[in-house]
Image 1 (cartoon, rainbow, N blue to C red):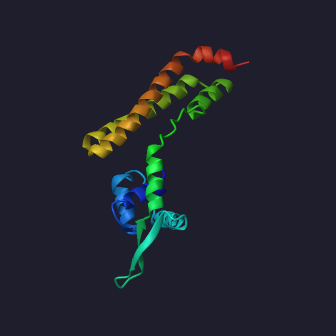
Image 2 (cartoon, rainbow, N blue to C red):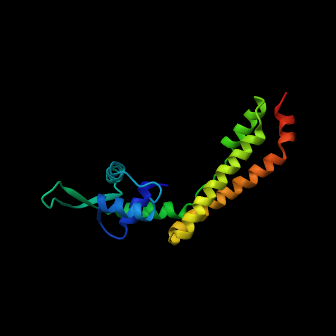
Image 3 (cartoon, one colour):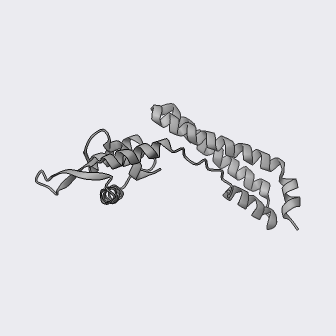
Amino acid sequence: MSIGHTLLGLLESGPRHGYDLKRTFDEKFGHDRPLHYGQVYATMSRLLKNGLVEVDGVESDGGPERKRYAITDAGITDVATWLAQPEKPEPYLQSTLYTKVVLALLTGRDAADLLDAQRSEHLRLMRILTDRKRQGDLADQLICDHALFHLEADLRWLELTAARLGRLAEVVLP
C-alpha cells in the first residue's frame, strides 16, 4: 500500500493534522497494521518537500505546535494518477513454499509432511479470518475475503503439489 497516496487521498476531503490523518488511516485501512506517528510525519514531510501538500495552518492550543496539512493541485493530480493505474498482479513465481518443497526433496526430508503442515496452517488462518469476517463490518469482510481467496488458491496449489510429488521428485533429484 502506498501510504503517501493514501494520506493524500484522505486530505482531499479537507485539511487535517497529522494526528487526524493517522486516526482516520488506522480506522479505514490499518486494522492489522496501524501507522506509527513517526511514519505519518515523515511521509507528510516528504509530501511537503515534493509539493504535494502544503501547511494550511499551525495551532498550539497551549501545547506543541500542530501543523494542519492541505493537499495541493499537484497532490490531487498525483492521487488521481495513482488511482487510475492498475496494480500489478503478484504472480508469486518465487514462492517460498515451492522452494521448501524442492529443498525437502533434495535433502531427503518428507515433502508430504511439509505440505500437510502448511495445509494445517492455512486452514487455521482461514478459520480465524472467517470468524473475523462474520463479526466485522463491510470493510473488514472485504479485506478478509481478499485474504481468504488467496489462501484458497494456496490450498489448491498445496493439493496439486501433493498429488505431483512423485513426478517432482523425479525432476529435481539427480
